[in-house]
Every structure is written in C-alpha cells, then in structure tokens.
Image (cartoon, rainbow, N blue to C red):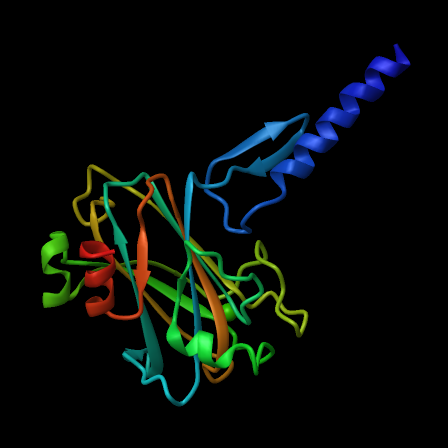
Length: 224
Ligand SMILES: [Ca+2]
C-alpha cells in the first residue's frame, strides 16, 4: 500500500516537473493535476532574436517614447495569441528561429546589456500575404504588458520582462483574431532600449513568421 502511494506520488511529481519545462510563455488555458494548477503550452511557438543599439532606428513613438516594431504573420484564424519579450536574450537561437542581423553581429561581444521591456500588440489591416510589402496601418491595439512575474527575472533580479495574451472574439469583428499581420511594438519606460532581446509568439497554428520590417516579412512568407 505504501509502495503504491509512493509510485503515484513520483509519477505526479515527474508530470508536474514535465509541465514546468519548455517556453516560459504559456497559454491562458490551465489544467489541474493532483491539485496543482498549471498553464498549458501553446501548440506552436516562433522566436525572434534581436539586438538594439544606435545602429537600429526607432520605427515610431509610443506615448512619446521611441518604439521599435516586430511584425508577425499569422497564417490562419487563431483562438489566442501570446507574446513574450525578455531582455537580455537567454536562449540560443535554433535553426527555425528568426534572427536579426544585428543580433548575429553584436550579441557575441555583448550578451549582458538589457532593457526593461514593454510590449503592445496591434492588429494591422494586412490580410493578403501577397500584399504584405505594400504596407498597411494598425487597426487597433489589442492588448499590452509591461512587467510579468510569469517570466524569468532580469539579471538585476526584477520581474521587468513582458508577457501578454489575447483571445479571439468571433462575435466582435475588431477582436476576432483572423489571418493577417500583427504588430508587436516594444519600448521601455524605465530605461533606454539597448541590448539583446528574445521575443516569442505562441498560437495554435504552425507557420507564424516574425520580421523587423514588412519587406522582410513579405519575403519570409512568400519566398521562405
Ligand atoms: Ca517591463
């Protein structure tokens, strides 16, 4: 009897340990196992590695702060989009990850500089993959986040990294997460935007692509 209890406990522990691994960005859906509530991962993740310094020009302003953009192509309607950004970058880019040329050039010499991330998710009016490079505009801001305690702390021990989730609302056309281009703006309200970062997009569909410009995104989607 004691032995059986021990085996059950061990398997519960290994299951919860297993659920705690993988990307720190999890979905809004959680599941209870033996009284432990854990968020489930997204079915698909896409990662982007970047490095910001004076050679990278801001793309716009967010509340009077210099803002930089990432564009994500979502190839089908989704239930939910999750986005996280951590600075400095801590993972090693894999072959399927999107890597900015400035990251490749600078990160090796400076893996330590980081900033306090702040992210804003907008839906754009680009739904035709053949027209991505023609550009477009933001239709609306869906959601934003400054600091999330769900992510690893920064090297200063602060929970200043960012994580957001947006779920679809098919009854509200402005909140329906349709196929198309989504913009992730990032900035910082406590520091300069300087150093490396890794951004992750989680959804339930494969084939999400991320780039720092619409031209680049167009190539990834139509030629990549
Ligand atoms: Ca922050």
